[in-house]
Length: 228
Image (cartoon, rainbow, N blue to C red):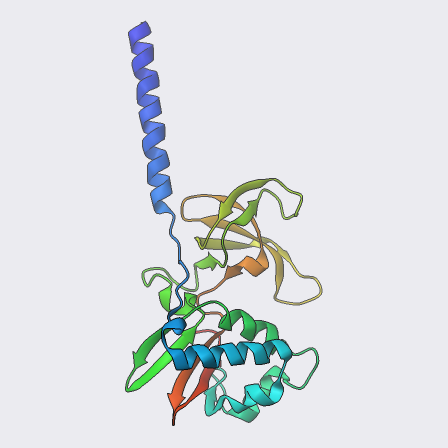
């Protein structure tokens, strides 16, 4: 009887151990990549652009836009459309915060036709191709607290770093002052970890991204768009 009990306990332990390993293996991450540092001319250009964005230097930013910049998948494109779309002269323009996030989170060079482009942030080109970009998102940060409840004082159940997640919008906390935005998102990792994350740390791979191309010796922003 005692040996049977030991055997049952041992098998239970083995099953739990294997289940834990299998669960852990399901977790997937989209780790940061920044190839912008390897090209000296682009590195210098990006540093100046980041500085201009922080200063909200409209003249400089407009000056690096390609005349045919893609602003959406339904518009005509161009600099005037960009300025109107982002209300670039308004003190409340949302361009600066969004562009700063894009520019300070890595990116990659790639070839599109005959053009050599750099696109940022890194999540746009490095999100797993076998996952639906409309169904999955990612934790956009390192050691982000996953909380039991949507509250900064709530218990931290785990810390996530660049994990792929699914978002449960129905049980997330919307921003009552801004339609379509959230304060807290309820997420679940591929490994089954569930909880709430501050919404600013969750990003879709098809959220805003910028692409740059060197034309006549000068880097130009040819795309600043969201969606697919």
